[in-house]
Amino acid sequence: AITTQALAASLKAQALLLQPNPRLDAAEANCKKHNIPSISVSPLQGQFLALLCRMSNAKSVLEIGTLGGYSTIWFAESVPGVKVTSIEFSAKHRDIALENTKGLENVEIRLGKAAEVMRELKAEGQVYDFVFIDANWDQQAEYFDLAVAMTRPGGSVYVDNVVRNLLDVEEEEGDRADWSLVDFVKGDGRVRATVIPTLSTHKVRVEEMVDGFLLAVVR
Ligand code: SAM
Image 1: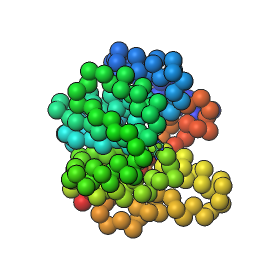
Image 2: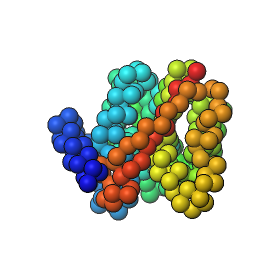
Image 3: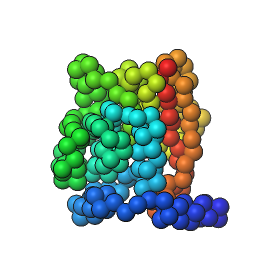
Image 4: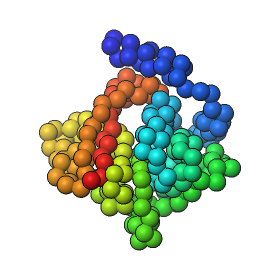
């Protein structure tokens, strides 16, 4: 019951606080039309990510996991002058994301496996103010490790679905969730980190709504 109440309050806040955005609406509709799974961030979370970028005046954002470019649009519109690089390994998703971000000159989408592309970007000497990790969960720690190495001091790394991932692993392996991201980050002296539990307003099943992200700031 408390989840239902929290959900109702969140949806009300969403209606009150978020401005209509035709590009985001069109992107959502285009994803639906092409049967892209509805696993993008929620509107309130998109706004939160954009606010984090605005607060830190992020000029270079790296996103791992483009899908149809919904969160990419939030980043591209977050800060004047920001440049967004997004990595996606599904050509279908990349193509839809290109349609959805058409006209946004500050967006680049790189096709490939995230870890490989991140190593390429690192070799190119790219440095980021904000990294958003939102792809396959079994490589969260690997992506985090690479992301921290490519983020400037004071920049941040945001990993989505960390709580959900931990719950799923515990369900499968009991208490042996020792490869979870949080276990990895606890010994990482390069960052200060926290985990914030969340309720995703756009998920259909209540069990899927409970989640949480990890936010780390590079020292
Ligand atoms: N960030 C998107 C949003 O909020 O609109 C949602 C991303 S979706 C949760 C995850 C995406 O990561 C999918 O499009 C999937 O194809 C992609 N992906 C999964 N494994 C990947 C990998 N190893 N390398 C690159 N992309 C991957």
